[in-house]
Image 1: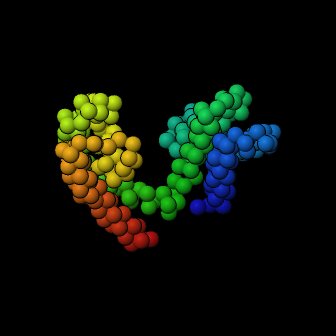
Image 2 (image 1 turned 45 degrees about the horizontal axis):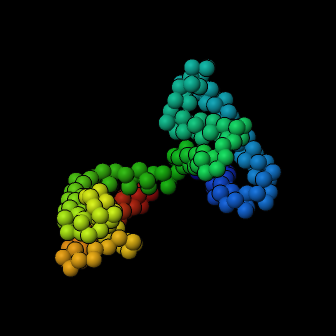
Image 3 (image 1 turned 90 degrees about the vertical axis):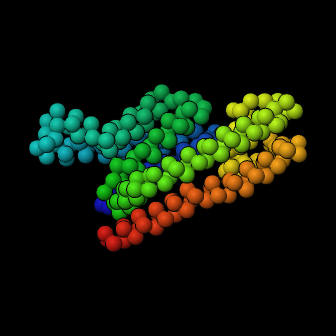
Length: 235
């Protein structure tokens, strides 16, 4: 990664941290002018970097002239940069109050895609993507089994607990919230069966969840291992 890209990446990380702290109202209202000044500086820096890149790319015959520069902006990574920069200017000129404005500022995280597109990290991500694609059948099968288990558990709890707890289990979609929390081993405890049969089904679902969660986790672990072994061999 070039020094310029490292600097842009550091600026992106700093700007993201700024948005995170700005989401806290007490921090934001303590020095609103400082946040505005820093956001304006970041927006200007990103705009200058994008404009300079457009000017330099014009030396390439493939991107010469106005049409060539537009063709360069149409590239996926360049288009992402353009969208992120435009979003920053929109927020700067006409800021959106509340959480939606914070989300608009977080669009700047998209700049990471273009900055790291030729880095070792990006190559590792591409290798991982290919490895996941090679194991797509196993992953689809494991997720299919999980969906079947989700439907079966939801339907059984709807039939058993629906009349007793209509708010929690009065329909299959309502029972799905409990099934998702159970099958993912999260177990919030806000919804639970109270009948003996319901608890038996819930226990079986919880035991089944161990295998269901373990299958894709094992597949992904093997995929990560093979992908990074391939990355090391390429290096």
